[in-house]
Length: 163
Image (cartoon, rainbow, N blue to C red; front, side):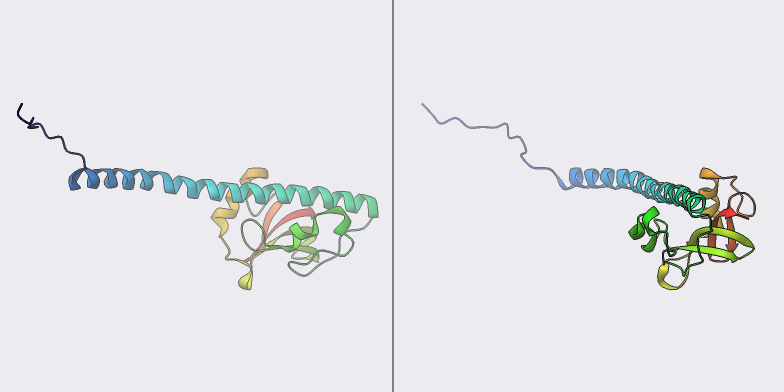
């Protein structure tokens, strides 16, 4: 018996061209998927901000009805005195989901009482009016000059409790 020779050899490895084709396909898929994650992240930040505004607005109304006075003016990032039992103070004192810090105003910027986000210094870059108009449209009239959510200054966007 003579030894059997195998004349039909099948390749057991990928060629360089096959590997390059797979890499190109993965690159194309990544180029399609990554921007969608970025958009989803932006929408999640905006939605989180709107939820916080609604929560703080409810707490502010409850405080004003129970205590019979408006919340006091506070420095940006500082919780108004007496409001601590009504909200999660840690949520108020840390940066918002869109950057900037929370701030409460009383008898300033042409309003009686309101709160919102203040972008200043290292607290976060102002995302701009177009971005904030998208947020406004999520729960108000989509116009930063009218309605309950307004632009009060170049770096301040506030929910108006009492005009």
